[in-house]
Length: 266
Image (cartoon, rainbow, N blue to C red; front, side, top):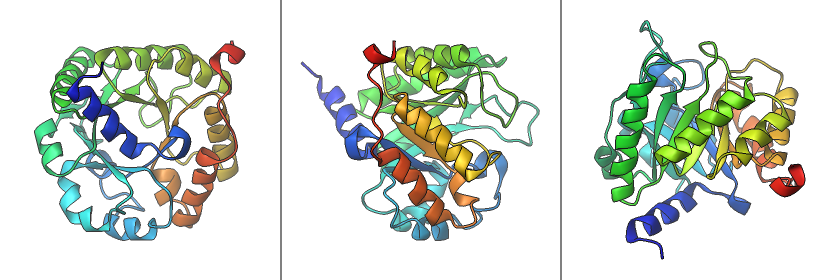
């Protein structure tokens, strides 16, 4: 039998699940680590342009919520990010807590998220923070998305499927309800990650380093391999036409492709 808090976790997690349980998140949490980079100088204006896109949720830092709350479409879930660290510092992969679960709940969070840079010097402290956040969130019936990032060069995605699979599994065992991975490798690599993770896995959109066609094909392969969706930022808000780019991504996530059953994939 589910506990009352687990019922809350399941109900809130369903807020960021779109059709067929797929997840399409718009991430605009880049301002804290990277500053007002092109595309998010005016986040409220960006959100108004995204109203026709079937995003299932928005990832945002707590301090930005008051200035964009009126422009968040009512059908989107709210994922409040609790981790912080900037590119101005000497260790940008080292994240600390800048907000609390209680604060996130007070501003309407459906989900809270936290970043763990596995393999970093400060991994132990980030894991401990993730454990405390997960315990607190679950006591309120709030699901936790852990951005479980495998070792990679700063600002780049991981191409090590086994390290990404280990990171995702570790995050799930800490207590995450959903995992975000920075893996951007092969379809078989995504299948390895998904097979070893007992909770849904979404891909990080990553930097705009490839053509849109190549990005969409990579996303299509990830969904085919069992990924639950994507949390996308720069691939949308730095595109020449952000709304059009977002609609093309949504078509891949919610399109006709279906994950290959793990039994068949093995």
